[in-house]
Image (cartoon, rainbow, N blue to C red; front, side):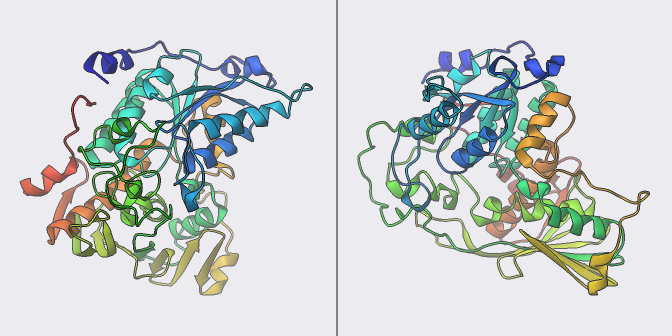
Length: 439
């Protein structure tokens, strides 16, 4: 990697539209929206399978710094070669010959950006890579499905929003609860006053640092495996020795790469809380009573237990903690509504039978997060989980992490996206990137 390589990856490419935008019907290979998948370990492969289910999409390339290895979810196999096989086996089933070879593999995302025949990218990388790859994709004229959490820092999130807006791209965040009928229904009930005046919202997220990879005990320095470009994996993050416990899944428990459970789930439940509160384009004005438990001086150093309160301008309190009921609970003067994946509840129970009338608030309806993205690539309309909404939602988690680390209450200006009279806290809104990486 060198500075000239980065410059080459930052070339602004012409505005590219998929063939389907020009009114060509059907889903023949020549008319499909072409896609590359960048990050083919865990959620990347899951998302890729979802995109393969839409015959308007043709996956033409996969990209990952790891060729192939175990150490992903439940120590499963991941990497660019397994992803390529999945893609080619899928398309082979549609061929009379039963064979298909048409998925290119890359180890460097900049090679994907240089491909002018790729319309869209699916980005599923560790958090510390999101801003660099998203901004590069936007500059390259590609629409983006980007996994949550959107960003490693508030500044990274704002940079991504600005790039997507500047280059007129469609961006769908992988906050798939926006396409869940239970969350949508709960939020509509709240937004239409079925629980009376809203006063408190509780987001229950998981705690701890689970060993998802079954490699968590391997924290000692080991040789970098063949086929794994570890320096590229580190990218803008600080230099650190390789160990299996650091990469592939459990990176989310290391502050250099993520924000722990607070941000890993912060793209989900706090996002739906903002949806129900009607605060998707703003944020809290105070973060108070923040308490976090950390395993300091260990590899996994994100909060294992946590609690913080966000106070909004209208007085509503949002509580984020692993000590409250999982999911999102909206509490009002006349009842409550709770939602989680697969169901929602209310008290009084009659609230659940309420009909949202035509002249009331009807929230964005999407029943399939992947198809919604493709629909919007074609229509050029905003998707269910647009980037500005995702940025505002994950900012809540970033603010909570900062308040817990500083161990004090903070005042926040959601318009300026700065703390009020707190220079020390402001320094935590961004991170220094390791040379030569920069946005």
